[in-house]
Image (cartoon, rainbow, N blue to C red; front, side, top):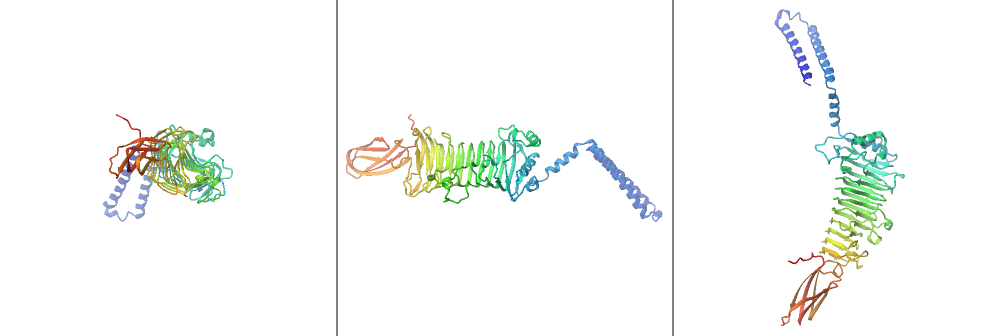
Length: 514
């Protein structure tokens, strides 16, 4: 570079020197001005321009010979400045949905992966930051016969958005329209993709990081599922409509921090009251991983709305009317006995309820249960610990359905601690709670209070508090004499007209004596 600048400076000084001599010659001898013709002047200027061009040309050739990497560096810089939005129709994808667009879409994805970006920071170790390339579906409707899979694991910062994907009639019945799982060597198509796979081979414990799937309609055509996210980190599924799946609308397996929001899922296109609801099958969202969130999502048809077998997941603003409990459906099924750690808030369980196996650290609050929908605690190993079911609304049809129920067919709950079912308001259903308050009155020396109609767990009262007031002239001595079978007996030494107020708690922590 220094040698190039030196040559340019030398050429410029020579040109200026010759030009100055020309001016001196013309202006220094007024008697010869007339002899200096315009033609002669322009001829000299032409020769100077030719001389300058020859110097610059030789310098350019010499510079290329000295620095062969300069040209490629400039090409890379130019390529980096080009927006990396891949229009799939330019790859031959058919936006009308008549022709198979699988190959064209995969080519666009491969090109997006072929030019790793240089983001301002790196992702997880072993994850290449692609820089944010986007696969733009351009609002088209694309027919695909195979799952769309990323060409290699070990990459992140990538988006697919803006259109419809529809499974063909011969789409694999166990496949997913978009499959974010690590491709095996045998699944690579051709040497080009195998080479790309080796370039981006992941040394990370995750397959992908920060993959965004947005503004998509996915029609599984009753051939498999919609989206599969396997062992990935910080995946975002936003504003998607996923329908006609037979397995899972969305499967999340391993990894963590998959966020699903502002989306609609249903096996069948319906708005409730479907004549075929009894035959609904499949699962809308299957979370087999930790630390995921489902927010502002509607699930309108499936046998199970959300199946959860991972820890520390949260659900907010979820509306489930996938399949009524009376027809065998479940809104949210928490299938991780003893390790639940799940929060369900501000949600709407519409004729379908919640099932939790051996719940430990489960919080359900500020939610609405309609159409006799209820919460079922299912005993597997008899554990219920750290459960809050509070501040919800339950509305039913006066058929005697309890708002919270127990399934002890595998054995009774034996380890019960810090379970609070309280402050729920009920209309047309039977209230169940772990905290109960009852007032009785009578003229006598004993008062029995039966809490069985209210208390959730059988034969379990951990804490009792009572007060006795009398309007008689006597001042009776009284005491709590017996607690068994969810009944409380209070006796006094003399008969007296009295009002007795009793509060009991099934879920309070055991007291530790000093």
